[in-house]
Image 1 (spheres, rainbow, N blue to C red):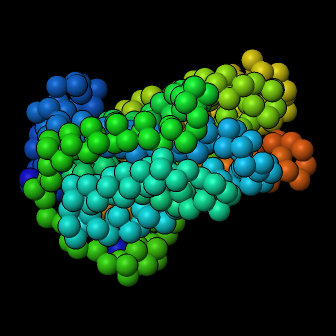
Image 2 (tube, one colour):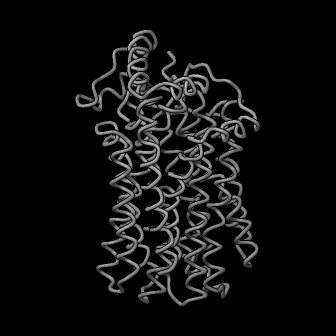
Image 3 (cartoon, rainbow, N blue to C red):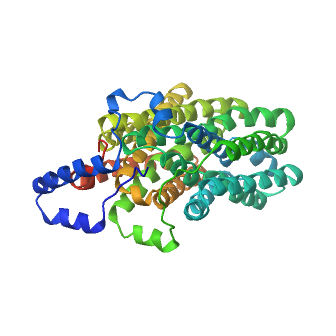
Length: 448
């Protein structure tokens, strides 16, 4: 059964030509017809149970999408937790360290567009298998040959971008199995695979301290092969009609102003989350003289908070609406970043970054509660497009922190600028909320 339905551009122009009240009345009438004809009786959000995930879709695909996403994110950001040890071994400057941990994020952003196109052509499962094989090949090369210089770290970062691009595969693969009123929870659970960033922060510095950082790439091959086998055996493609997308379809979607807004919101939320996750070890080691293992523990704590709370953000958006929840999450993240930049006490900084990562993680879930409601018929392309925006945000934050440290001796300017982006996101929500709620939001089978 096909669950997604969207709003055509002609419809939106028609809505805009009428008063909001008339548009709302017409849309609500159409919504009743549409949901009766195209969707099963939805489970009320307040009564949603975990068993509904099994009864309403295909839970093995949801689980394997989570595992694929989890491992991919683990290797995608592994240069961050290893950055201190690799940087010391190669005698890298703060700017070079920042760029080293940022390149995988930028590579992932670009590759999300590529994998998004492949998902609609050869299927999400085949695309996921190919991406995992590329990452495995990169890990083998890094284990055998090492990373002898700065240029080699950048090349490895480009290969690891295939791990970050898993976002454009796992989320639509899982989401296509479930109805609109469950998208916040489903996208949140599948997207919670970004908890992989916690695992590498927790284990990579420890393994590197015992066996050397080069061996970490070899050890990562063990879960890589296990996840690939599980994914290949148990994941399935949803039986929905999917129109093949072309590169021009991305360009066409970018003509829609809502596509720009979603890209920006995810640039702030996911970009902030992954940019911080990639920079925590370098920050805590550089600012407080901690060992890589100690810095990795604090990085894992902060990153775990954001990853674990992503489904909570999606579920809260299902309950109170994505717009309302994003207001709160951006505000908390911005204030936390400012507070962290203004102080230099370890305990207080850890607390502020816990709030920042947690709020940004929940904002990720909220953005993807809204996205399928607006772009349900183009969810594959939009997932790649919005995900690319998130990767660009992460590249900017991670690289800007390194540049700020190198040129000013402090990370504070980088945090201040990103806090300002949180404020801009709040202002943007104020500009679009009425239009969204009275056009496509009025016919969505979910709270907006």
